[in-house]
Length: 438
Image 1 (cartoon, one colour):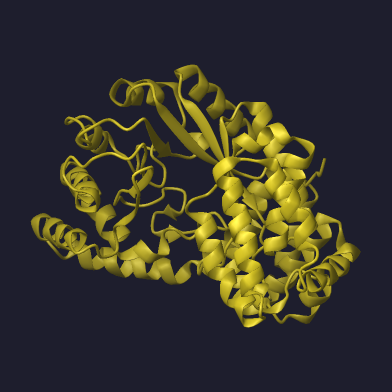
Image 2: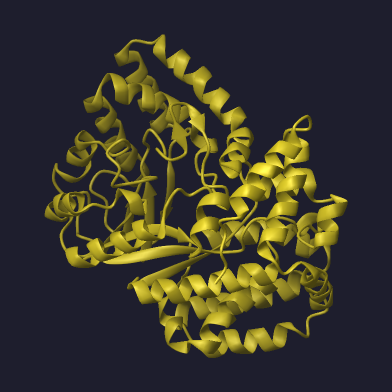
């Protein structure tokens, strides 16, 4: 598949780092490797990721990494995702330890929680104890499950609700029954939907998750008595602003119909080992893509903040009842702001940015549709909106998604495979023949 070849090539440095570290780990005996990982975790090197507030906490456990991203040492993640590359050294060591001693691997996973949060810490109201794919036994082995959830309580007091993250394809009835016995009734399960369109999710986002996977997962989670939540992207790498808004809208409506309790909205941000990161680094001045309107200097690879507002507005202006379902990601919105702020500050837009962010935050807290409706109206008076409108006008010439993906894929191919880029483009166009837009 074209996109998997692209992402595999982007991730080559990580694959090489993993291979090198795995070989180095193999030279250590099991006790030495265990102690090395333990020391690194205690020093919070390459492993610990945590958000901790009284109301909401996320603790990402140290594991052997995402099974979808790492296939026998060859990395190729979802095209917009780069949670793994900063932790490649730790992932390689943990993977090596897991294959040698599942019991010691499990002990390290438990230790990573205790190092991040302490032994038997006070819980937040909402707790998310997460890995890359929590219901996947390749990452969260039976030994890990028993070590983390089977040896007494993690917290002094139970959180009101506990959250886990997993891929839709990993959700099975037997897994849910097993986990419910330990975790109880108040559990939310977050899965990555990203976009409704099957082709875009798999042939462009590189997700390898079908609509049937998602439907089945939601049904099983609801039958278990748990809460299904799903992530949706604001901004699809390489597509136009209008295309991204329409895809966001149709995805939110579909997710509501499927029975998702909450819909977590995540604007795409520049990350190193991603499709949008590659487009930003290598193609932001590309003449063909400038003409297409999908690259525009420092803003390339991310939706404009006006697009983020318009996407949310597209939903709540037509379906105000869905405002209560929309959750603005506590992880991905800050990442997005960090990426776009230098661009807006450089162009004298810092005050406007602050106003927009303040309104977005207000909506996130009170779910009042009027906040977004007013923001949508007022932001069109901002001085920088004229430039944004010029970009939209340029993009109107290429409203067909197949055309846009084909042109973006062609420019990527010319850089990655200069000697046989025609063949790669032909492969992509053949795949595009199966893309249908409803």
